[in-house]
Amino acid sequence: MGKSIHQSLEQLDIRKSVVGLAIGAGAVYLLYKAIRAGLKCQPPLCTNSPICIARLAIERDRHGRDSGELRRLLNSLECRQDEYTKSMVLHSITRCVYLLEAEASACTTDDIMLVGSLLDDKDNSVRIQTLNALKAFSGIRKFRLKIQEHFIKVLELIATIWDSELHIAGLRLLNNIPLPDFVYPQLRRVMPALMEILQSDYILAQVQAIRLLSSVAQKHDLLYDILNCQATQPGSLLFEVLVFAERLSEGRNTPHYRAVRWHYNEQSLHEALFGDQSRLADRLLALVIHPEEEVQIQACKVIVSLQCPQDVRVQPSSCQTSRSYFRNGE
Picture 1 (spheres, one colour):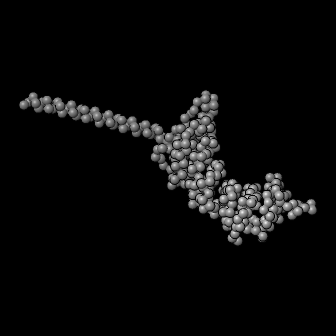
Picture 2 (cartoon, helix red, strand yellow):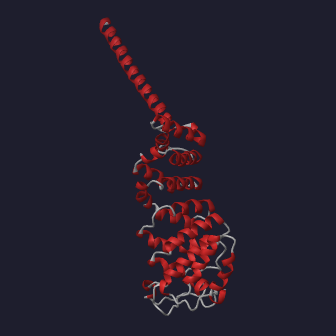
Picture 3 (cartoon, rainbow, N blue to C red):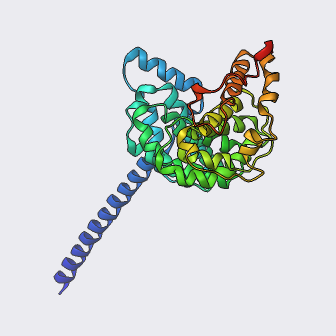
């Protein structure tokens, strides 16, 4: 009887030892995973400084090997972080893409999708830094098609969030990638928002908006939507506005556009620029003596483009010269 009790106690001790060993091993493994995850998710501290990134670029050129900095930053985006940390990581990614071109070119479309997914973040600073990072990646040709997939989302952000920094970042991105056909319906919907930005008090946003509209003005399917937007008198962005006006003027005189009889409302951009009461050519004559030569040249181009009579369907090169505003030595 005593012997069986003794054996039972020994077996119990063995079981306790095995269980304790298993629990201990499990705890060590969990601790290892936690430490590894923490090291993986922690962004490199030196990337907060552009000098550090520049040094990495110099060392790579000197030794011919990647620093791995951009890859570590991209990996850290997969971890849960607060908004401030995400903004800083994205800001560092933007710097790395510009300074570590070889490492940026080695990235994949999955990396672009990972960065682009942060456009859905609720924090505005994160969205702005995401736009800046995508703009940096758009300088690499192989990523442009993938970045185009975010075109509609960027237009939505620009149209629904009134923030000058977001407008500038978003429009800079859109102006750096080709305009895909599939975004035409969304462009029509956001045209009033773009015109509102154009007439705002934020110069940098105005310039980016006019550049996008200048590109859109070359698309026959969207020309009417621009010309029929409500607008106040055009502002004084001079060169960019003059380029925009020239493209609109040339577009409205093409056979493709003139094949349809369009009707514009009285407050439309068409009436402000090309209506009977606009006197646009007369006003542009003052710019012929503007101190900036590029403004002078562009003003002359717009005036010449306005000489095509609207009741004659001819190419711009066939415009009548008898109506020139430069006759009689003017």
